[in-house]
Length: 262
Image 1 (cartoon, helix red, strand yellow):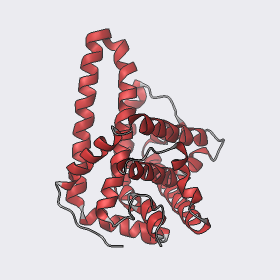
Image 2: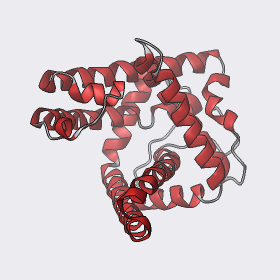
Image 3: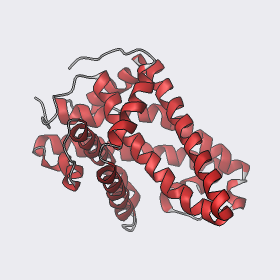
């Protein structure tokens, strides 16, 4: 397993590869992403432990989307069962993935708990418990501070877990080591990831502007809300498709069709 250092411009290439691969199999990726969302949403509805369970399986579900991208990039049609690939990788890999998921759940909930110290848990309830978002809530200064504080804390958390599911699955790296290597890879390729995130932000803004302009011209504000949400989900599906390429360029992954590597 080698860590590769890529130029900053590679971040834009990851975006292009993600979008291009998505449109090779748009129906498959749309279905997989909605299945991914449904899976997480159903688990989050479990009383008391719902949020923790949803966070627990997130690395495994993200890995499933990576494998789906790998298959589509090699000309295959990803089936819905690909989301369960982590659960078919053998007992040792499955245990490691669940441990990684547990670490992610604890870390994320800790971020939410720290944000609750600022606004009394208002932002955490919106994010984890689907509490209603009202103008009064959004305009509350404490809510806004908590939101940005949580966002700031999530940046190093995302660096720790960005590559980790792939390293656990394809290279058999233990969870803690995979998190360390993931953070190092993100830091060593900080320029590429900065370009990557800025490029995706630009894609989201442009697409949202186009959708709002068209929907407003056709049906006014009522149609804008109807069109914007599916469009945002479509963009999110493309974003998740591009994640595989960012991991693949930072670390040597097995050739397409090889689910695991010793």
